[in-house]
Length: 224
Image 1 (cartoon, rainbow, N blue to C red):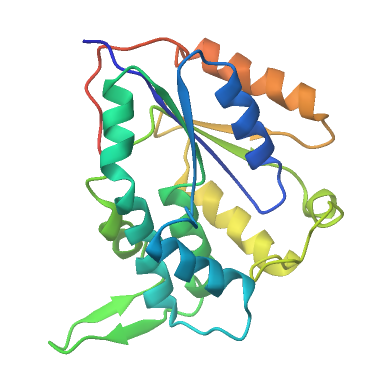
Image 2 (cartoon, rainbow, N blue to C red):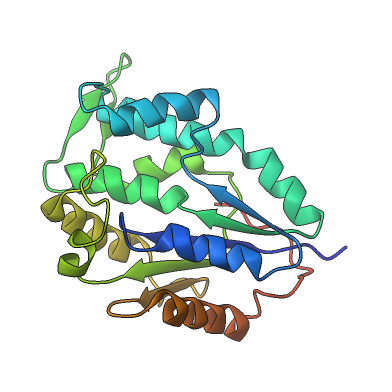
């Protein structure tokens, strides 16, 4: 039985990914748009408090694992939808979790000691990915990139915890390190700088058509 495909749009804060994910979902006859974090769940409400209230503190390890737990909350729903022939459009996913935590610790070699004497390295991509192993892997991941001057001038910039130019620059570099077009044919880096919403939408659809991700597939669902 052919299934729908899983399409992920990643990008920095205010890069236009949410707008494009919504437009993209409207192009399929059967689709479901899922935004991460999903702030409607019990875990999602805690994440929302963390993101919007700068007085609310969590350790970086706790925050990273909370975001992963939020993705696991929707794991079964995503798989069921794909098997029912829906095209599932994701606005953020696993790679955001890795890139944001990595950006905070990449050059600090931060470690957390465990009770058994082992250490957790928050600058390790392998450790950061481990809580998400087993989740469905997107059939196509598109990372929207543009320069920081353009992002920081957009409406609403600075409303949430991580919207700072220097930090977002580090996040961008981390995204580009973990999303490698040369190693993974399911990844596409898309430059959306100085383009209108309509131009970006057309560009993304062209990528989708060229990779035939707009069609039902007989391929089994891959996992991270």
